[in-house]
Image (cartoon, rainbow, N blue to C red):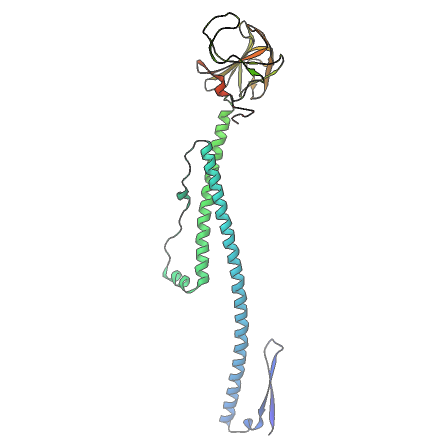
Length: 306
């Protein structure tokens, strides 16, 4: 029996299939020949469809795997951002507590997302896990974005408030005016020079060696810088809002009336001028028209309100 060799080549491919078909198949009636040709064509179509299907399926699987990896990365990023927004919220609560402000409401930050979803979108999301997962990622991203936006707005508001407070605190006395030993306290006492009993001591005395530096305890404007029979070399500074500080018995003055001074700026040196029994600084704090205990305006250590 004779055979006819048929070579089938795939388009755009180096692969081919060789078939050996009996010669009599091509000698029969035209209907038989047509049947053979159609069968042969169907065979070719089946081989081609199988090859294309395998190639497309392989490409789809790779694309799906890549998409899964991308979604996992996005989910990780969203989890990190969600955790970061939580850290920001705790920091925000601490700042509110530090400045005695009403703490923010945690429930208000957990904003929900939603809205009308059309039947077509519901059908797509219900029939495709990928679209459902993407929709959930989008909703989660919108929720986290809302939280971060609210954190940013809150910190901007806090920054403005703190800036205003720092601007005000610059003019509030909050440090010790000099280094030394605190002696005579605020309140009634026996005057060390005149011996007068029950005389109000309107400040505190801080003793140290002559020429010990004396500092302005807050920003302000020098009202007086002169010699006073009682206080000797004397400086008075106005800090605004009815607050003034006064410094007496100094050895030397370094400021003059009308001069703007800043906290920690040296305004003079300790001495024993005026009615004094030894080298020390007499320091007063006035609020309005009355003296107050200066110790309440001295923070411990080297701290200040700014």
